[in-house]
Length: 204
Image (cartoon, rainbow, N blue to C red):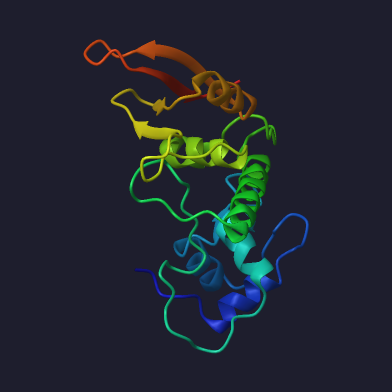
């Protein structure tokens, strides 16, 4: 598990530009924040550093409290609910986390897509397909499958840049993903006859 950020690194995060999330700090501080998943280096010159969704959440949480027992999950880590047994209990705090994570992802799209587009997935989403698709579904209010309750399940597939989405409401799931910049098709598995979506991030 990664070590928590130092006080100096936290000050850099807290001092980020409120609008863009642009960071100012030493090269060592910025590199450390990138390793912690709290910042990313913009691919275009002048290669400034900006907060990731996790960095935005840390800044919004305010100064770190006094040392306390470690939480159940690493600080600043957001886990999209993909459907299944490993789920996180819902509640007001979860709703807020999902909203903040989605807004952070839209900002990441704006900062990293070549044309600053927010209507289609960015590079991070293409390397985290299952989590990205699940976040889009949860942010739109869809419920994941959990403890026998029906809902969506997002799973990896052998196909590059494609995930499978299962559940009782495939058409609403497809509409949500397409609005979030994915392209979807509905298929039937040959062996089980189970209907599912095959979803891929749209490139244009």
